[in-house]
Amino acid sequence: MLAWPMIAVGWTLNMWKEGLASTERILAIFREKPEVADGPETDYSITELQGEIEFRSLSFAYSEGAPQVLKEISLHIPAGTTVAIVGATGSGKSTLVNLIPRLYQAGKEGLLLDGHPIETIPLDLLRRSIGMVPQETFLFSETLQENIAFGEEEIRMAEVEEAAETSQIRSDFDQFPEGFTTMVGERGITLSGGQKQRTAISRAIIRRPKILILDDALSAVDTYTEEEVLKRLRRIMAERTTILVSHRISTVRDADLIVVLREGRIIEQGQHDELLARKGAYWQLYQRQMLEESLAEIN
Picture: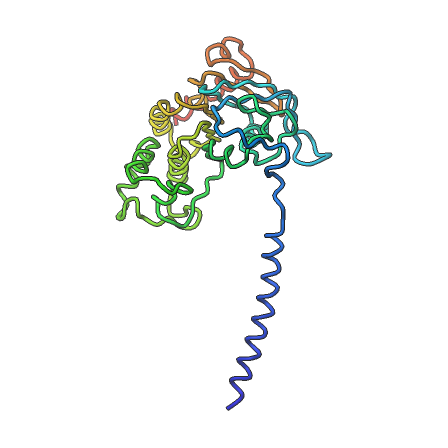
């Protein structure tokens, strides 16, 4: 009669030991201090941002001694303007925009927002003021509505629907049996790449941020859908600072300023027609894309 109870005790002890080991690994993570956090230089009198961004001779490497990913970047973005960043893969586009929400530390005085060194701005205020859609879209295993309203406690359903309408995803949701209450699989596995990107755009704009960053956020949608999304986004973009990172000329051609990066340096900047007239790197990119589109139409 004691055999099974003793086996159960042994099994329980074994599970307890495994649990202790797992707990220690979890606690080790909790004990880690974030590399980016508020510090002695943080100025808590800063309570609002307008969206002016300035890079001052900024150079950046991911670690000490590593090659520089960005080199002597100087760029002024007035509040309320739309700036596009283009360049080949690995030119530093994503790294540049990831410095704005301080996903990485930019270094002293190299990056300013509204004239304040970025390290003096309270981190919570900074990130609440930025709506960002990264290249790798992350969705939670929750409903579509909860994914769009994530992080916002007082969002009305009408606002969720408006954001979905703007990002051209509303019609897709209406086709789902449960509409906005449809559960999204882990990392959005039940949605296509374009649907995930447009859901993430909805999540970014519903917060009405002062700064909107779209990092190749329409790469998975077709050209027609991209044009429709941008058409609806322009009203929102006109009210805030917007940074577009894209490989597609069609995405960036209407920006107030287009910046061309190569190997971590700014090699050209200007408006679409101005850059085409120079027949430099941007013109070459434009010609290549026009040729690719022509070949695609033939095929």
